[in-house]
Length: 156
Image (cartoon, rainbow, N blue to C red; front, side, top):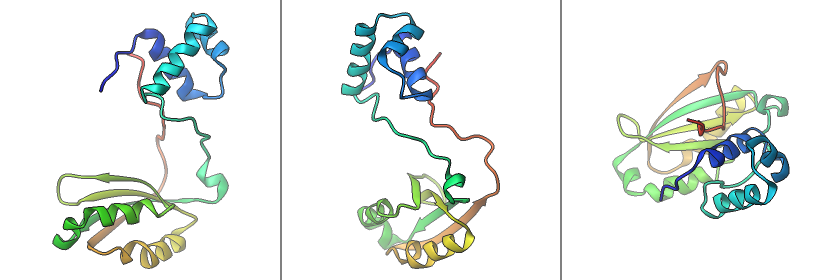
């Protein structure tokens, strides 16, 4: 269900997306509300699932995850009938940060991070290629990152 968000809600969400460590008092001051109504709005958005959680974002390169791969995965007919088996296997791989079901020539798009190409090669042969039902994997190495954000465009 889509919840109606007013301009205060949207400003609160924009601030939280940039810095989730802000206190409700700090947010209230920046959006022009008093602390209690601001806190109640944040709680409501948490209860409604608009705010799913608060996390710490890491710089993958500073922790040694220098390689980012996009893998297009095509399942065979048998694999498509065991969609759940494939998705459970993918969810179990910490190297896979994102997985999307696609319409078109391939069935899935995976975003994978590893330390280097050799680590990806090990991941591919020891984990990904061992998942039953995979017919084809096309791996695309990202050379550089032009834009990466977790912030949704909530301000209109």
